[in-house]
Image (tube, rainbow, N blue to C red; front, side, top):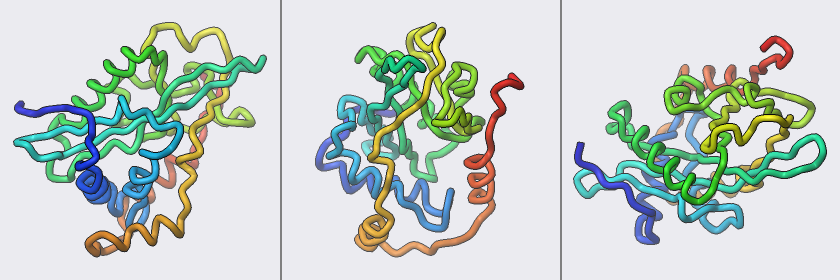
Length: 216
């Protein structure tokens, strides 16, 4: 498979925002806001530019992945710096062809070189368990109030790095999107029809389901 993975450049910004919009449009909600997240993430203090990658096929950018800093806090207040990724985007016509998997696996290798010990994400487990992710509950990683979302997944880049502690996950505030600004930003792009579709209900169910820790 002929493809190239490289760091994103300034001249790629608009292309990446457009492909991100196409990749997420109507998937989780009618329309999407992921392209606005990409836009604001690059200037945020938690953004990790070394892990901002695009994948090219036939000299055309078809996908992107971005990382930010995150942290785990133990019961005694000890903090462990980790990372999270998202959005990860592949143009619809190139999905289900292995490009996303290769992009993500490349980023794992580079994240490990940067001494990142672990990654926590929110996503559909069916898309990530084959990449080595497990339920965060397996590592005793929760949100506040010991909430274990079904969609919260974790992967050790350094084996054993998450063992022996109970952790609370805290991600970057860059993910707290200003809805109004996101809508205004979307007006800069070609008009696309917002629709209701089944994937949105699947996302709602997954986002609101929880794992009961003592049942594991």
